[in-house]
Each structure stands twice: as structure tokens, then as C-alpha cells.
Image 1: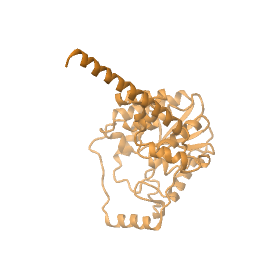
Image 2: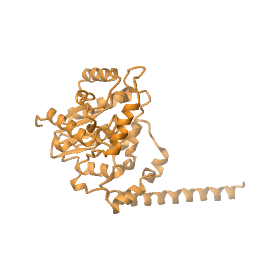
Image 3: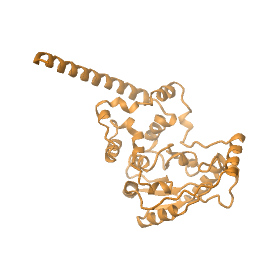
Image 4: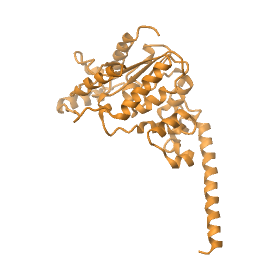
Length: 312
């Protein structure tokens, strides 16, 4: 290739890159405009709802589906919000906690599943669920970068954060899933007769699984996030409480005892409710082995309310 053709090719490449860069930003800011109108649904709406209410709420619960489906924060405070999001873990929760207002008294409830704390495979990638705001929030950007999730394509093509979310955004813009003004983040599970029968058959014909880990050394990243939450809450007038929600049966208890011991050592308040229903394990309280029905969730929420009766 002669020099003339090389220069022409380079110019063409630069033009293509520039055009895609401009188009990407047009798409990005367009979807920012649309997504900011979404206040329903877990993908975007719940995060937006949290961002606009986080400075006024006085009780907030974090965690995965076992938070989202199990904790009615309205029983604890009329100014409570459940920020549980399915499929998330400690990195996601810790990042959102750091976005709370400084020097405002709040009760922070973080629901954790103890086995997850001892898994070597945990990499903090659940924080990537927040990448839609990577270029809009310095805390989210920092936390994503901190767990080595640097996505150099997204650094250049900002609209990549909306991949897989476009249909959900459009749907919730025009047909909101619920009225956010009466929604506080709590999504109880209402179990029908068929689901009850399926669970009963499962328990009848399946052997209880003994799912114990080979070792119990806490994942270093998990421990890091525990300490980060503790420091932030201590410095900003927040009461941090970790809990483990009920399980239908917990066949391996060593992770519970190890986790309890570690949290005592690092001085974090922790309550293990995994066996809350062990002496009164009514079928009506359960959807499956790890998820409570709406009836079970209300009983569990009453238990948390009794724990937190002391005002801020």
C-alpha cells in the first residue's frame, strides 16, 4: 500500500471512529433522558426511585431477592425503603450504601447469605449491575473500577451500559409496572395452590441436601466490603445491622457460626434468623426452600420490627 492509500485509509478509519463516537453519545443521552422517567421495574426504575428518595428515608434494606421478597420496611418505619434487587450481593449493596447522605441518621439493614461470604469465586461483579450510571455517578464509577471491572469499550462507547435494558426502559416509560408513589420496594410472593402443592411434593420426594463448603476462610473482597460499610456508617451517623433471612432448612451450620464469629471480631451487629421458623415451620410461610410467602415475610418483618423498636 502506497503512502497516499495509507493516508486515505487512516482518514477513513478516523472518520468512522468519530462518527460512531458522536452517534454513541447521541444514543447515550437519549436513553438517559428516557431512563430518568422510569420509576418502576428492577432494572432501572428501582435504582432511580432509590436515588430520588435516599436522602429522606430513615430505614433502608439491602440485599438480593431474599431482601426484596422478605422485608416490609413499612413495618419498621413509614419512611422506609426496600432496596433489595434479585441476583445482587455485597458489592452492589455496599456501593448503594455509600451513596446515602452523609451525617443523616438512618438504619441500614443488609441481608446476607452466609455461605456466599466464604466462596473463593466471589469477584464483586454484581456491582456491574449499576453500569448504566457508570458515567453519571462518581461513586458507582469508582466502585466498578475498584473491583477490576474496567470495561474499556464502555469507557469509549457510553451507551453500552444500556445493553439489554432498552426494552424494559421503553416498556416502563409508557406502561409503568406499578405506581411508584405507593411503592416502597417490597415485593412479597403470593403463593397459589399449585405452587404450594409443587413445594410439598418436592419436600416429600427429595432428600435434604447437605451443602457444606470445604473451607471457611472469608473471601477477601467480601471482608473488604463489610469493613467499607462499617466505616461509612460509623462516620455518617448510621446504624448498620446485618441479618440472615429465614431458610426452610439449613443443613450446614458451620458457615453461620464462622460468619457470626467474624462479624463479632470486626464489631458489626449481626442477627441470624435462618432458623426463625424451625419450631413453627408452617407450609403457608414458604414459596420454596429459600423464599418466604407473603405470610411468612410478614411474620419475619414483625420480628425485625421488634428488634428495631428503639427509635433513632
